[in-house]
Image (spheres, rainbow, N blue to C red):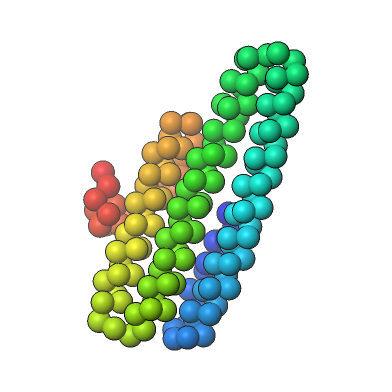
Amino acid sequence: MALVIFGLTLAAWCSGCGASALRSHAVAAHVAGVLLDGAHDSATTYVEHELDACVTALDDACVDRVVQRMAPVSVAMSAAEALWSTWVSMIEVAHLSGSSDGLLGALVSMAARALRSYVELGVALEGLGLHLPELPPLVLAYVGAP
């Protein structure tokens, strides 16, 4: 799913500029949102099923195992939703601002927000023993990350 969202984002960013580019971004963001909703619903259904089995078996350790097993999914979903929200905000700012002087500053600010979300996801995943590719030092310095 992450690759699909990345592909949609890349396709939208390569669409040029102007109203047609905003339309492309809006469509791609909508599709990504539908995919995120579906992934969230699937994960929720899976967890409910697993927890029901734990309750039926009266197994408290089972609940702990389900929570532990689903922790990476929870972290990934939270990060994906934060990044998606930033993307949608960028589209809205671009739409509302048109070609105003404040547009670039607002978009740069939102890009920094997306980068901070990536860094925060990396920290959360480190706690689970997972690792994201590192960002270049110049990018990390821009968002004020260590």
